[in-house]
Image 1 (cartoon, rainbow, N blue to C red):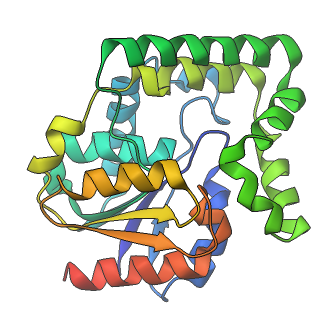
Image 2: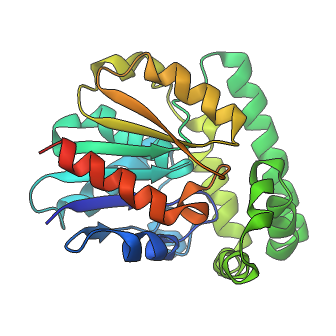
Length: 250
């Protein structure tokens, strides 16, 4: 049995992996925790990016039996990089979707923290529904207009199960400006890594191409007719990538 630790993106839920699990090979085991601020009670929220990595490591340790593969999407991919950097020997390989290893300069970090703080203020002042409306209009997700209305409606329903306070905390604790810079660590992660990017996601395609030069054992996989959220837009194609990844690591 192949075990996958699956980490969802910002505003996502563990249920976002249902279609992927259904398309995956029989016997695959999916473990998907709820990320801080995304449905868990406030008492369980991690106060920082590093604390969330520690919480996820403890969560996995209680459930892990044998080699485990990592699958992370967007925010989940950033957390997956943190888990790999902290304990690469715990994982047999990884599939990172729309990954960003971090910001390299103090000026970039300050700018991102400021932008996330403004986003938090709008979220808390105007409420969850208005925030989700704004989030869904981001150019990053424009390709999702081609999806079936029912698929988009289910994603929106899941986003609206959150709270403004929870997502605001996630922005403050897990935002890109709060994340360590993992670029210098990539060369030491000597395990099979598939860098997955939607073929129409130009920004993250550039990031993936740069990361590809640093990982010792990585390949770049471009999802056809997809933007940023390959989990949502191409679950069957992604399941095939995961199958190749698990078979190649054996």
